[in-house]
Amino acid sequence: MRDERSERHRHCETPTCPPKPCLSRAKPRGRRRKGAKQSQYSIPNTQYSILNTRAGDAVVKRKFLVSVIGGHRCSAKVSNLAEEVGRVIADSGAALVCGGLGGTMEAACRGAKEAGGTTIGIIPGEDKNKANKFVDIVIPTGMGFSRNTLVAGTGDVVVALPGEYGTLSEISFALIGKKPVYGFDTWDIRGIVKLKDVEELKNVLGREIKRSNDV
Image 1 (cartoon, rainbow, N blue to C red):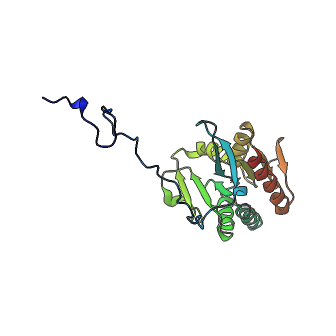
Image 2 (image 1 turned 180 degrees about the vertical axis):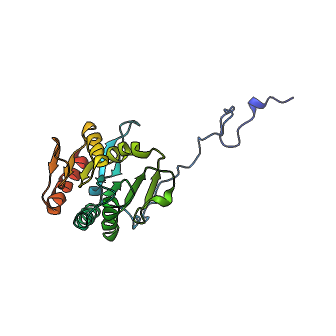
Image 3 (image 1 turned 30 degrees about the horizontal axis):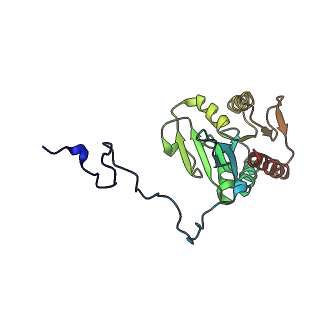
């Protein structure tokens, strides 16, 4: 009987090989060919937060996220404000995160979509169809009101609009998590930076995104 260990592996020149396929001559994948054109869908760096991964502290770029919180029912005035907030977030290049249902959440998503932005809805139930029609990415949790922790914790910053106790809980979770919280006519709580209009929000988001890129 011939000694199988003395045979050369068909993929390499060494007398012996481990049981798994030899990768000594494997071609690297995922590299762009020299002279290849960059994708037309590349997004400017200014629209991302920069974080360090654990894999050798390599720098990776992630989309900047803004959580918008507010009541599931709202007046026409608050609805218009929420739409403007959504448009400002989209114009900044950030993605909008919310609870995914109606009222303030739907209005903010509508504004963001009108400006060509991306919207993420973290809903309390398990049925994706319960999300409003302006949500691009629906995350069903089945957690009920506990999903408020996710809405508050997902954003790099939080924008609070008028709302009741659900909004209050999200503000609290955000502040506990040391998230920057900016408010429009919302709960009067220490830690919230109050804004007068969406022009102020534009400046705030510009600074926050720049700060995240400088990390």
